[in-house]
Image (tube, rainbow, N blue to C red):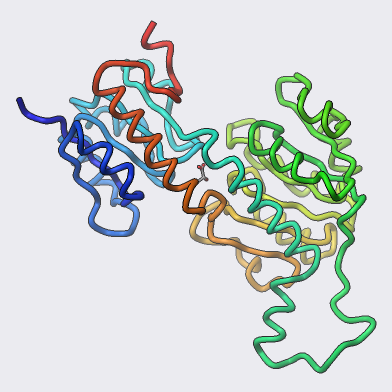
Length: 326
Ligand code: DGY
């Protein structure tokens, strides 16, 4: 009997590929680069299932091309690149990779927080460029961390983990909730306070952004949000770039409206807003939140298990539209 055909749009850790090869012939984009759109549509037409990444747009045009598709697995927890309603309308299961990258992404948010507050990257450059003239009492003064207020926007899995990691730094924690539901873990463990977005902006010394990108959260951080933040506050983003209006952020960082920012994601990746890279009060990473060995490996095996279930007509473990199986 002919084996299923699975296409993977970007090479993922081998453990996921090995798992898929037990049930399917697997083809992988040979380039370590995003698959050009025409090729994505061509491959969609040929395969039974596909694993894709956050740069692939999985929309009506994709599903029109994907005549035999029995399922699509996103190699990411964020799924703003997928039109889930369109998939559901066509009875095609789609999945993501929640849980396995929670700790890695929360750790990345902390790496950004420490780096920007204590000017780690800026001063590393000074050392490397041989510009340090020796110790001085007024040099490179950064922001305090212990005891400062941490605001979490989007207290889901990653936001909660990031906040829980503040234990040891005695930080009062504020959080927002789009559903209005309280976060039991944060309230029990940290005495965290559920507040409005506006109150969080006004009271936080560090704001860590973990909300998904949706039409509601797009440009949630814009000029008016920055104007409510403390001038001494820092903004950390490991979620999705377009939640911040990046041009407004550059302006806020240049004018001293806020003290600094730590960014792992950008509005138009891989590009950055003009002026951002020239600023000393921003730390910029190339979207590496989930980039640890175990996270990326577990994302690969989770995506593979999801595809295997989809090929069998079963509900995948982290299905975004499970209602199609009822
Ligand atoms: C995700 O999973 O959504 C990250 O942005 C990439 O791992």
